[in-house]
Every structure is written in structure tokens, then in C-alpha cells.
Length: 484
Image (cartoon, rainbow, N blue to C red):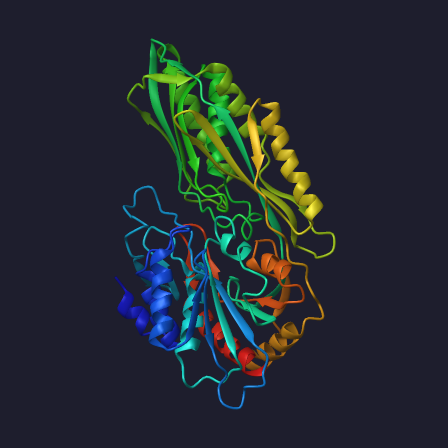
């Protein structure tokens, strides 16, 4: 473990709290341990601490001397983390600490997500709350639950819960960029009733695996041309079914709705007479797929190995309907913005396919900065499921955040960044969802920005936090809260 090395990084207080947070399990919807930690922190520092029925924590700190007349500033981050790991890594996110390491100027985890999204935001808030040498007006530090799987904490905030009307969201992932808008999102789920039949005689079983994909955030990374394990696996299954009478016994690909699918596997049956031909075809076809992805996915591995013969297989009609739906289901950028060059307006993520005891669930997620476009692509996905004879449902979704080019806090932040670093920051909207959209809907007129240090590979085991960017993020944060 490299906790000691992290403690030697600057700014020391921020990294010390980040190292502590790495030891505290905090999966989405299971944040009890980090909530208890924050409660104890507030009590230890004699700060007003409030925990609502959902688990959102608010810690308030009075202004320092001479700053009492400043407006209340809200610092906000979410306390849950995406729990993704490589299939060969033994890690229990409910009990085990994250194991960090330092490599080439970055802090990484060992085979799992790091949780810098948004653990580093939490750490910065705690460092300010604990300090007695930082000048600031009155502060409200808001720590929300369950951002990653539904923004439940932000949705549950009451209209009178926050006193401030200026909010600094510490959940962005590109230092040097200040965000003033974000996309709204919605999930669309397809459900197939599982119908099986006994395994036919005269067949051989194989396990097909797709591994080594980069994955990533389904908002931030959707435009980068990365491979999708659901799409790649299904492509092999669909053509194998057409050419070699492949029968599907099980399928499991992808994981979280807001992550691009990195891994997938399926157990299949091939008639013994077709087995040699299938293996030869598989080797050539999988090599073609790997070649297509060689630039963006150099570590892609597609394998086929002997497996134990299962007792049952998917009913043939169901198999064809499922494979057709996965092939037809869109994934990736649907529309680029007509107003902001290079900005993704609308996208959809084919996140996962999971086979349970009585059904097969296909999870997808749609995002757009235009609400009508988000509804349109969600309907597009739903129509694929309906054509395939599956049931479907939509989540309630969450609102986008409309940019305010006249924002006072944005202007202050731009000036502060220029004074600190001699260049102007980029002021942008982000295709990922942020809690700012929900908070802005609950608190009309809230003046908000979002910023943070540089995090790459969020929502995947490749997640990494750039060490040098944390210092710049910290210096900017301190200058903003002193000046606002």
C-alpha cells in the first residue's frame, strides 16, 4: 500500500483526507460508513452538522474574522463511488479499502476504481473545514449520497435545506476547465422473459470472453470511439448463430449504467460437426474485430475456450430476438451540438445485459443537453425493445443544467484562474450529468459552477488522479472562496 507516499504529496491536508477516504467503503446506496465518518468529523471540529433522512450531510462553518458580511458559499461533492473492478481482482467494495499506488505522476488504484470521483472533492471540503488559516465567508459543505446510480441525494434535498445561493460543485474531471452547464439523463431498461429448453445432444460447449477494453464514463468518454463489450460480444454471437447454429446458454456483459461496458462473457453450444469450423471462423472474425479497434483498444482480448456442457440453453426464438435487439440498439454519439463546436449534444450507452433466473435485463442510459432530444433517443431505444417483443421501462431521469453566461461566480472564477496561472480557463458545458441540474431546479437562481482536478478513466479500473492538478485545483478553490 502506498498510503504513506500519498501523505507526502502537496497540498498535504487534502491528500491526508483523501488517503483516509480511500480506507472507507462507500458504494452507491451503501454509504453508511462514510456518513458516520463525516458526522464524527463535524463533531470533532465543533461544526454544525446536519444529516437528513436520505443520508445527505451538511456541515456549516462560520466566516473567518473580517469576512462575516460575505455571502454564504456552498461547497458540494457526492460521497458515493462507482465500484468497478477487473474480473481477475478479488475485492469486496463493501468491506475492503481501496489500494492506491503512485505511477508516473498519477494516483491509481490496484485493479479497481479509485474513487477520486468524487473522493478528492470530499477531501478538499474537509481540508477547508478543518483549517484555521484559510480566509472565507460563511460556508455550507454539502455531501450528497447516491449520485452515481440516480442522484437520489440531490433529488431528496428540501427547498429550505440550503441557506446559500452560490454553489461550487467539486465533481468535474478536467483541471483548467470550468463548467457552467451539463446534460440531463434518463435510463431505458429492456426486459426479456427467460425461456429455456434442455441442452440438445451432440453439441460442444465453449466460453467466449471479451476483456481488456478501456471502458470509461458514459458521458465524458462516449465520443472517444472506445469499444463496447456488449456490442462486440453480441456481434460474435449473432454471426455465430447465423453461420454455425450457435445456441446461447448464458450471457453477462457490462455492469453499471453510467459506464461503457469493458468486459463480457457467454457460454455457447455448437454442434459437434460444426465445432472445428466454428473455431477457425472465430479466430479470424475476432482478429478482424481486434484490428478495427487497434487504435483505441490495444489491449482488447477476445477468447474462446472449452466449457462444461450446461443443462439448458435459451429458447431459440428468444435467443434470436435478444441478439437482434442488442445488434440494433444504438450506442454512442447520436447528435453533436449545433451551437458549441465539438460538444456532444445527445448520446446513448448500451451499458449491460444480465441474465437472471427468470428474465434477461438490458440496461441503457441516454444523455442530452436538449430535453426533447433526450426523450427522442430514449424512445428510439425503447422501440428496439418493443420490436423485439420485450418489455421496457424508463427511469424518471434528471434535468440538465442550462448555462448562465452572466454568472457572477463564473466571472470571479475566470479572473482568479487567470491571476493564478497566467492563462484563461476554458468555460464549457459538459455532456456528463452533474447534480447542479437537480439542485438548480430545486433552488431557482442558484449561481453555480463545477470544477475539479484532472481525473482520467473514471468509472473504470483505469481511473487515475493527476497529482499536479490537485494543487492547482486547491489553489483556485481557496482564491474563489476568499474573493466571492
